Length: 289
Figure (cartoon, rainbow, N blue to C red):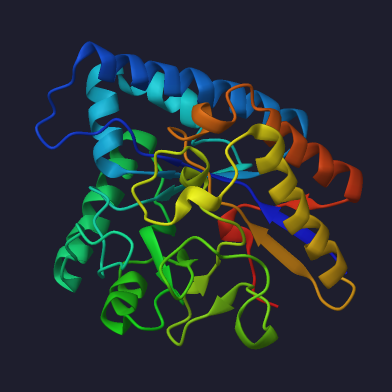
């Protein structure tokens, strides 16, 4: 049997409601794009496919600041091994979280407008229509408990979604093992939308700066983070003796400099995949088994 990993990167900061950026904000934007260039070079070394989940407001403001050509050169929207997905327009939650009590959920219709605004921005600047969605924050059991939002996702043309990204206590304890011995693997919702669940903690937990309560237990150093990822991949290889396995990790462009400034973790993951024959997929290539 086979194991595939779905490399993805969320690109969302800086973005502001009022669009007023300080020199520090602009420096963060430029440093982020420089890092993205290094990430692409590294992934190219391993012939890796990848998906970039882009926040609509980030994209509009980045284009206004640096120009469309610069942003397109960083995101590579014309390449066949790169998929551009979306992450809504302003990154709102659709439900309350026990570990982020300050968040206020939006309505299904507001969510629909978020998807449409993000899609419009991506189509305008990147000349592609996003069919994959990374739900902001993520939720326990994904969209199973949110049928009105699931319906919107399907009606707005989304085919793949990563919404299942938290444990029952709304922490980031999302690994390959699920509840009742069931593996956390891609599946179809009743309307045909494909869920690609997360198989490791969101990487913001590795920064020491996450606003999600309970993240103190997660690793902070590159060697420990890489050890965690290798553990998940090793478990996937064992599980693949019985069935094909797809592994999804969650990385943020703004988080990586905090725990992986030299991309040692990313290189270690890709090197492990190469040595063990683990392939790569874009989100839009994931098919439930």
